[in-house]
Image 1 (cartoon, helix red, strand yellow):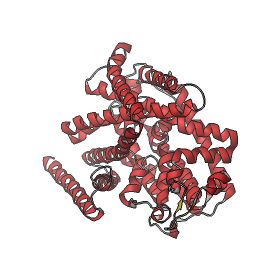
Image 2 (cartoon, rainbow, N blue to C red):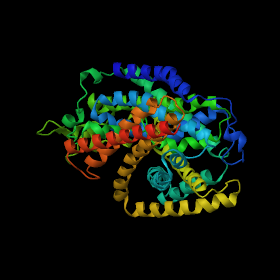
Image 3 (cartoon, rainbow, N blue to C red):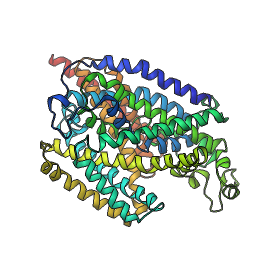
Image 4 (cartoon, rainbow, N blue to C red):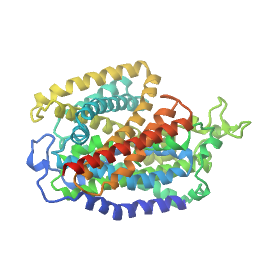
Length: 501
């Protein structure tokens, strides 16, 4: 528990201190924002700052800092360090600078920013890549919540239809009609859930593995995990540390801000808040899997199913280890119900169902905005919005139909989405670095996390069994060389820029 409390304090200090460093480097001023300059009553609408914060928090969070943190803690206490340092020096800086860049460029999206600072070829690639990611996320977050809801009441296809119609509404209607009213309520509920669970943790004061107990891969001995901490941990915990998905959501809020000075609490602050969510659930995961918390919250029949194997790893009758038997959604449901009772069950339902639904709705809306920017089409008329939304919905329906017919196949595709978000983070950090360098500002703020994330995504692509599956040592060498090449290319570009002055 000491590591947990120190980590919470570190996140608080990170916001109080390092966010001001990021703000000073960027330099917000009193210029007119896109919400005022381009007000259209649909996407460009001034909203209250607290409401924008809540929407931004829910948009970037969803279930990411919950499920990712639970699975990330399977590697052991090293997850604390990634959440804290990744959030303060990587994710929050990524969100702040990219969000403020969007604000400075009329609320444009990640793909357009990539084109402005990395070239037209990079822009085209990012348009295709982000569109694919947004539709994949949207489609995935239709069927999974429908399965859960149908287990409570109603038919599965009925819920698919209801959720998809909700997506149509969030994509087509002005942002203040559905998103501006519903999302803050869900965000507040998620914050209450995290606060309640944090209080229970402090009351229980369980004896947990601490950072100083060792940063090796604890999951290898306890669960038989084969993945290495680097790079797997840094992809498993994306939301809650660093996630490129956030850069696709921030432009929606950049179009609703009345002042650039709102950027620090909205962009940096929302990311730190997400880090707190990740910390709470990572600690719960540590309690559940490493402190035998699962024995306390599961029925005696479930506990009796497990026994030590020859290797000393606990397995059930089918040979499943603890992490195979208790997946992340199951842990959320069991812990919330046992710790918070009926109220906890409702909050668990919110985390497992409402959060992904809202994230999916925002993803489809982001896809429409990406197309609008790519084809330079205004979105003030319903006809124009429908014209761009129809192909998005068509592809989403096709993916949804494929997922229903091949549920396990889509799970494989989803593993690439996790890597894809980190690839987007690396690209966005390079965009921010080029911007800061051009403006003669402290580009080291984003250069260092850009290099780190480049190393992570390259090494993961080379070593992951779902991609190339190469041996660890040569993959790390290749990733190091590629990262060094990116740094050399940046230095060369800096010298070329200096010669032109």
